Image (tube, rainbow, N blue to C red; front, side, top):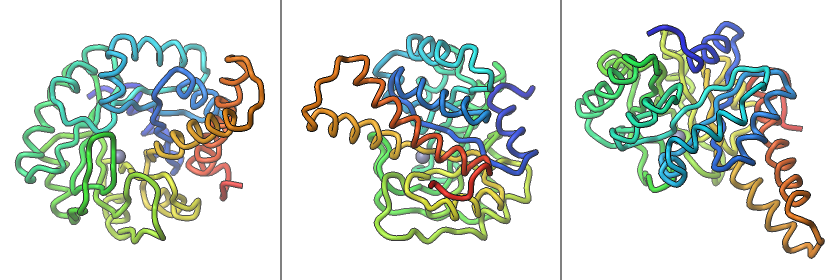
Length: 282
Ligand SMILES: [Zn+2]
């Protein structure tokens, strides 16, 4: 596959030994805030949308919205579909102009995961679109996807999955979880290290709530795309709630501006660590 916008930001990160942040957005405000954060730092960005967000807006409208937000950003902003279990929806995003799609059949037996991911990989590659696949279940809640028990997949199985499915980037089961952590998660750094020596870039899911040190370690070992979603949602909702409860009188645009700043700040703190510009979130 020829290098597209998604593979460009991944390959650029790989050359620099850093990671590109992949930020889940759910409306224009969050897309604009994430892009502004990346722009202020001068780093590239991946904007990602859940399958539910695509269904909510419709692929055409959501694409137009993100495309408007990234216009003239002066950095490269790729658009990616996060965790999708619906083959037709994945293909629809490919058709509309997404730069990459993640198909998540990690809940299925390995052979089926390979076959179903490969079907979309072939479709995407024919149109110059990249694909991410997942093996081993990453626990937690991602939209309607609930994985109670984490299913581990070791190095050999992960390599078999990458080769069989023809994916461009891989989300391995390293022990991260979606949502916010209770306590410190036990991560499989050894798996990241082994996979990091191979050619397929590694995606770190469940990034919200990990320490800056943990991120830096995962990135040093080969993590090239780091997803954040929960911290974005929390900044959006918590700021909205605090503003409403404060009783402060604000017209809609100043209100939105305050929420925008809160989302931008949390994204910026994470991107600064992912890109090696800072060692901590302070
Ligand atoms: Zn995920």
